[in-house]
Image (cartoon, rainbow, N blue to C red; front, side):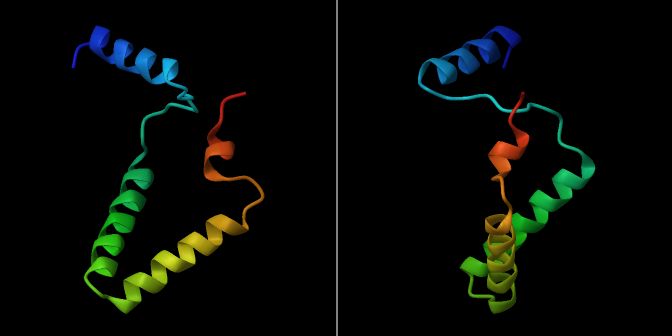
Length: 76
């Protein structure tokens, strides 16, 4: 995807009511966390009770925060 195509896609997203929050490169820690979550989501779908419990704990932790993840990452 060229820079022009990328900018056009971003503009189309904004024109349709989308909102850009803090854009940054994912750190190694972010990538590892996303990989672990994807692994557990896949295992939970397959019936792993341990992975289902891990996913539930993450959801409860996120729900306990005063601000949502989107609000924490919002610019400004």
